[in-house]
Image 1 (cartoon, helix red, strand yellow):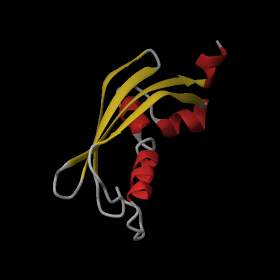
Image 2 (image 1 turned 45 degrees about the vertical axis):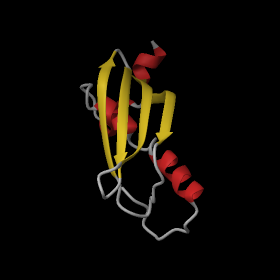
Image 3 (image 1 turned 120 degrees about the horizontal axis):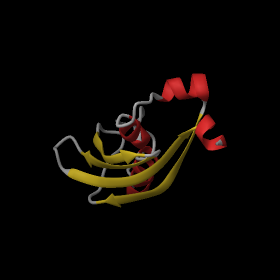
Image 4 (image 1 turned 90 degrees about the horizontal axis):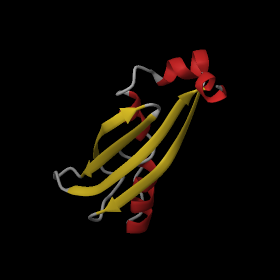
Length: 113
């Protein structure tokens, strides 16, 4: 991932944008563990999802306007909840940040029951 324009050299700006981006796709790693697809839930039945917690660790300065590899996985997903972790690497392969998140997911019909 990366932003699509060159940014200033402010390290706080880069860290804040990476923190924001760290929440964009974490649910995908969880739903991959469940027999559901985001698009099907939204189009057919609707869905309710919420981040129960989100922790982020910045290990080293990073430039989010350079390519960053985001590896994410879900080690546990059951009963509408999932735990996912992610690691961010710069182009040199250095670990620059880590993230962990627990996510709650229910279809609209399950929520009403």
